[in-house]
Length: 233
Image 1 (cartoon, rainbow, N blue to C red):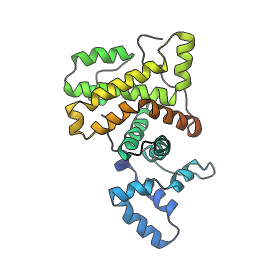
Image 2 (cartoon, rainbow, N blue to C red):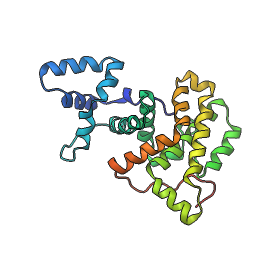
Image 3 (cartoon, rainbow, N blue to C red):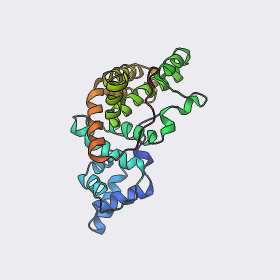
Image 4 (cartoon, rainbow, N blue to C red):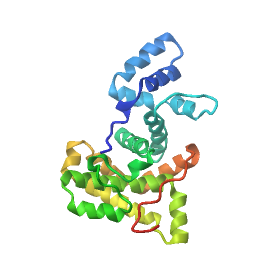
């Protein structure tokens, strides 16, 4: 289950990158390290524009994790869209980091024997699922819908136009409805994810558009796996 734990997975190299980028004097090193030790001030540190500017500088080779990389990119475009909640930025960055592995798109760790070729497969499993499995499957449908329309919009539009595959609005509807269902799930409350899923449901299209901007401006993406559709090839 993807959670809002991207920031706690930053590596030693990530912290070194942050401190090095923002420090000009030894006193700065001490001050920034002390700020990093507090959750609230650490959030503000991560919003410093110099961090994103440095990773986007093609002349500067940086050694950072996918968690920090996606967090800085996601935070930039999500805040620009009007969504300032840190946990939403964290969740999206965690999702992108997880889904950078193609295998993770069609499986969920909690159901290791299940793999999905189509969204219809997920919906069939959903009818037979226990409460925890239902939460995982509904979240996965929302995540997949957002990932594909956010990062591979042109592929979705091409397949819809020339192959009769489902449209972007189909994915938006699937993502919105399943994020809404997850937000009402009792287990989402126990995991402190209700507000995140509610925000993603209420703002699915805005978040999708923000990820489109991120994809267009900042990412060089390879070919995605075949979309998980209702039987479309």
